[in-house]
Amino acid sequence: MNIIIKKSKNLKGEFNLPGDKSISHRAAILLSISQGCAEVKNFLFSEDCLNTLKAMRIIGADIKIENGLLKIRGNNRNKIKDINSFIYSGNSGTLMRLICGLLSGIKGSFLIYGDDSLNNRPMERIIKPIRMMGGDIKSIYNNGCSPIVVRGKELHGISYQMDVPSAQVKSCIMLASILAEGKTEIYELEKTRDHTERMLKYLGYNIDVNNNIIKMECKGSLYSRDIIIPGDISSAAFIIGGCILAESSEIIIKDVLFNKTRTGYLDVLKDMGADIEIVEVRNLNNEESADIRIKSSRLKSVNINGDIIVRLIDELPLIAVLSSFAEGTTVIKGAKELRKKESDRIKTIIYNLKQMDIEAYELDDGMIIKGCSFKNTKRKVFFNSFNDHRIAMAFSLAGIVFDEAEVIDCGCINTSFPEFFKVMSSIGADIRIK
Ligand code: S3P
Image (cartoon, rainbow, N blue to C red):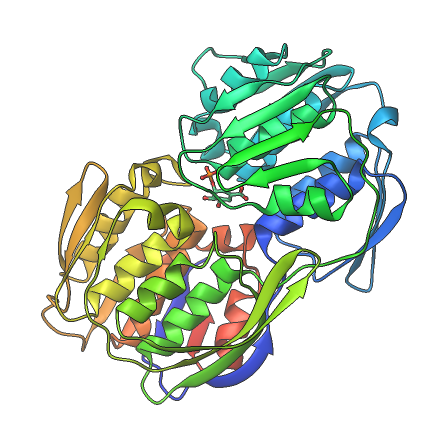
């Protein structure tokens, strides 16, 4: 499936978006091991999160979907089924890394595997701490990647200094700790997204978070409570980017996740001169959400590096596209983790920028992009998604400025934002599927 976007202007609308992907995964997992029953509103029914629901059913959670509402009866972490099973994680690094932590403390043997992209992503980063906790976890080809075999064991808490900034690794350790004995302490060099910590607190778990230090009692209890998931800020990011690029446009996206560990993109857009206004911030089950107003804007280049990188890591493909339409040269550094995502995003971004004749250079840990260096916009440009959802959506937006853009292999968008086409066309973008 390919997406075609033609030059578009006058994008208008006021709407909500499906729930945040990171929070949806965590709601499905944590409510499945809580005591009691709870409802989740605005859960993201994308391929990644549906795979998480399947995995949680395998370990004994009772999950129903009624009129778009998710109802989960937790199995209480002490009564998880004793099973041997296969768990398919599809394209989702979050599911694979989080579930390996949980399964490590559950009786039984599990084979966890993913699609081609996921089976090539690094899993050594979770194997190491799980083994330190006493877990039995192995990459079956001994290459530090999935497929992974986990045999549940009695675990103990650890004191762990993170060596990569990763919320997935941090959450893997926290989930393993829920089933372990003792105490766990995690030290982060850079504070990554903190949704697991926030949701654990919301569900009554004994956890203490002080800047980059997390301390938790192991073997604590979780009590089911209803959760409303704010709109996915990483999906909103594409709609915001489209509105900025299109002439005479103004949209309002309501109830978008506004957690400071995720808002780096909005900060960078402001630095680039984008016309963005945060209309109202509210608290929703220990997370924040906001209404965001965006208008068409002329952008200027930025330098991005340091602590902000973890707060916008998933938005860098999009920032690269926006930088190519900005005045000046943008430099992105300190983003080596981009090479470990659904594709090597430094390579796939540079490849696609070149399709627009943009002067762009690959760095080991980032890139340099010379804004507005394309020769002309009165033509059709072709891009390759490399089966990476964020590359597909980011580059499709170039069609708003060029006469037309076609992105090849866009089925991957269903992993995170199946409503992308619907939302884009509802605000007036000229978008179709081929
Ligand atoms: C995620 C954490 C980040 C992010 C990913 C989702 C999560 O990955 O890139 O899209 O939900 O915890 P890392 O933990 O690998 O940085």
